[in-house]
Image (cartoon, rainbow, N blue to C red):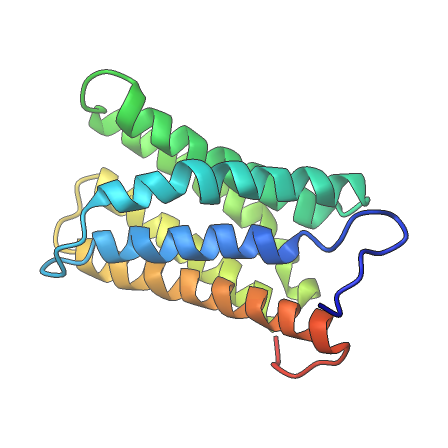
Length: 184
């Protein structure tokens, strides 16, 4: 391969972080779309390892490189996926409505923090955070008792993951060919 590790010893963690986020988010979105037959088990399996642990590690690498935006986002959303896994699979009993609402609401606020500054990182990342913010607003509404929006939320969340996957792919292609080929 032509990819070289930079002199610092750490490559750009954005590909792993965005792929972990994007792929887990896509499967999670699809599991919310009625009629597709995709259960939440596949999403939560990805959530723990790929969306959670791998993304968290990408965040630590980014923080080590002095990248506060990427490092905070990747460690934050890596923690989100691990917490969601624990919340739904490990903690006994079904979560109460207020528990879900509180969980989604604080992550909505976390996402708003990144949305405010994401425009500085290009239209691809701005779109990822804008759609993620909208996705969390839909999850907030669902937890507050609004009905009939689960499928809409599923498609919206899938689209967000797809765009994150695309941005990761564009970064990987640019790194490999040493020039911008896919716009992001």
